[in-house]
Image (cartoon, rainbow, N blue to C red; front, side, top):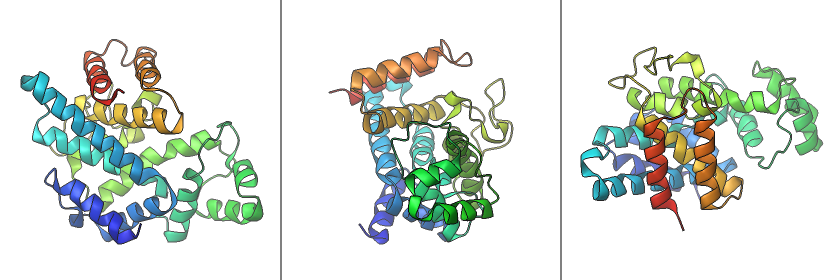
Length: 266
């Protein structure tokens, strides 16, 4: 699929929640196209958004008084769409650096997430590993960090890129906090009281919109990349919430998981 076709699909997704993709910077759009070329990220985000829309419809049909508002839906959809823009590297990375980072994220099924990035390159890109290590260092990154530490950097990069790229502020926090269950909280934007520690438009607190972004992201990863059944994925989500001291017993998470179970099941 050409970059133009990808952009047209994403433009339609945005228009359905009242946002014009053309209002973001050309560089941000180029990063989305790069992800579509080298990774499964765009397809993943489209599935996530489809599931989120199913949750919206289910709530309207079963609990209309609790249905997501148009502004919440926009936060969720755009949060899903832009959450992994950081998989193209730091905000200041040139196109070569962006491609290098995207190619790392394109490698799936890595079993040892404790291995340093330099060993990762030697394992998965043996033909030019040393050159890739040099380019990685040129981005100001330490090739001695673990691949897990590297993966976790993308949420912070998402925050930087989205803020610089013209993403609506209300959706930026949702995109940047999609790994909060793993305690990845870029720039500590979610405070202990779950309010945001800085302004994101009218979005003042981490609540059900951000939680739904997290859940559909995790659910999709569990189904596609981990190969788990629907039932296994739903149970994993329940267990993950209950194992996190910050969110154990969270009623919003529990309700959203129940909705996800209802709409995404076999």
